[in-house]
Length: 455
Image (cartoon, rainbow, N blue to C red; front, side, top):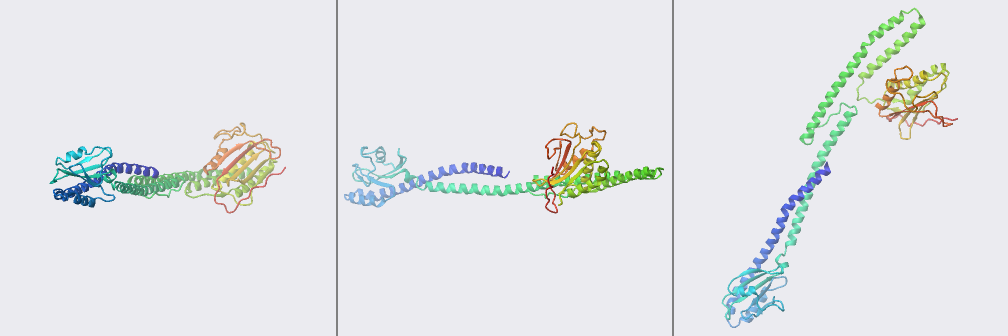
């Protein structure tokens, strides 16, 4: 935008200056010629007036030579006196092989004073001398083309300098105006970026031309409206989750009335887990979007691995967990990381034969991203390397587990990838490997890469 404005200003200014300066250059040329002609005419008339009485006496030659010599000089137009007998006093302008008397001189001898344009681009000023004894003499002033247009080049250079100065001034003003417009537009774009990132407190400062001020006002109205709608939606979700407390409480009471103690404890534990889930829904619904969540992926992975370790041991599974000692922070709430890990580990425990080994690995990639990998040595996915879509399952489940893990990674700006697991020692593919990659959040320390497995 700024460059386009500069180009438009330069083109417009150049066109306007061309329309103005071309006539001015022609006018200065014409003015220089008129001024030189006026000076030559005044000189010729003075010489004619001074020599009129002298040519009427016998001492005409000496007086005429002195008068003509006084008006000639270096750099001045050549002044000659052509007598009635065709003798010339002063520099003889006639060519060697040219006629003795030219047509302009014959016309001037008739008593007419005039200016004559020569074929070489110069100009002749001829004035007859009245009162000559032997006939009419003629005073001729010869202007060369250079003398006729003397000073024109300097005038043109001055005009060109003025034109260049005006163009530069126009570009400077256009650049300042463009900087103001571009700066206001960029600040407006930064506000829109903050709103897109979830900072609903961002507001644009109305500045710049009326159009940009109007856009800034409408953007602020849009941000306020989005904030109102999201607040209403969060409250509705929280209210809906809160209503679930009543049936959950009824389930707890029903569980306490069961005669089988073990069954009662088991159902009570399930109801407690359900209550925790409802509480999590309420907290998440009330969480402002502008809060920047983060959690230590390594710590969450170790905690969930320890949680599932007893069940893995009961199923005779070899569960390996590899995490760095340092913190690896990712921009995901801890509860969402916990849900994603529980989903991935639960899939291994539910959908692979007992005794199937699996591993949980957390590491920092060379690019600075955090990577979570859950790999097992089971039969793998029906379509190798491709996880079932949302709502699709080949094992009688809802098919939502892997989609929860996928959304956890993608909503944080990361990636969800599936592939056949590869044995590090043999290089053969077996089982499945699910990898969640997260962008980094400000860590508490420098993470170290996990040690490589050994054979």
